[in-house]
Amino acid sequence: MQTWASTVFGLWAVFAGSAGLMIYTAFSWGA
Image (cartoon, rainbow, N blue to C red; front, side):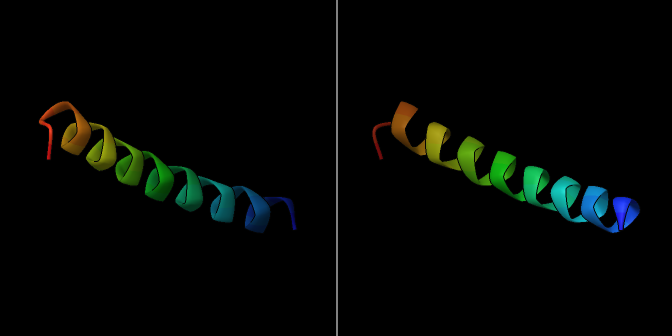
């Protein structure tokens, strides 16, 4: 359970991080 939770959280963190980076880039470019 601990490993499964860590894996899911890790994937979610990577997905949220890349989505946030793309949104930040779009706003910084004024898109």
